[in-house]
Image 1 (tube, rainbow, N blue to C red):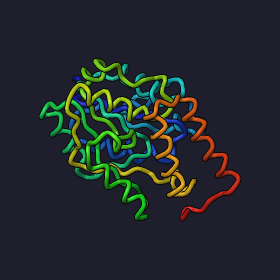
Image 2 (cartoon, rainbow, N blue to C red):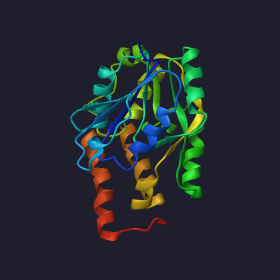
Image 3 (cartoon, one colour):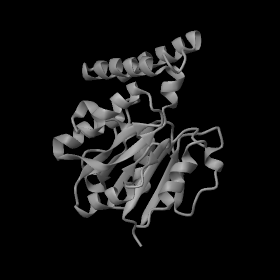
Length: 238
């Protein structure tokens, strides 16, 4: 029987987070298929004991490439793209199912982090809106497969902000919605690089992206943060 929903999860060294997300999805009662697209993990991600509904696919490294490969392997009329470090609330299944029953085209979740710092709560507050500056890949993407292919899928030339890019193209075609559910994402990068430091770096990268700066330049900007962190090692309270 053809599944109602194809859940596509790109992975790269996610063995510590992926099992939790898969265990949540396994509890969903309607028909879904789960496609894990691995980009060359070295930590044992691909050796995990996957549930029966999970199909493991391998692809070249790159989130946009991996998600497109997952879409090609999918068979449902709706795709749900999720990051591996996501955690779904108790209302997620009902919200997704209701959205599909209403035959709407595309949506994502409101976001929260697994860290209660006020700065991260402030960033998450804006994700309840559908304005383009507040839409990124960590909020997931629920989309009709037909629309996904009409707009050309994810841009495989993009190394950063591929989620922002596809939502921009979706909004040119149709109304973009916000699901009545909240997705929790890991704050691990904020704790590693510093909450304020990382978010301000993201702001800078986003502004450069909107100014038309190349993907290579954006990657260099992000790598600066990594390099500076190795030198200064800021605390989680930074």
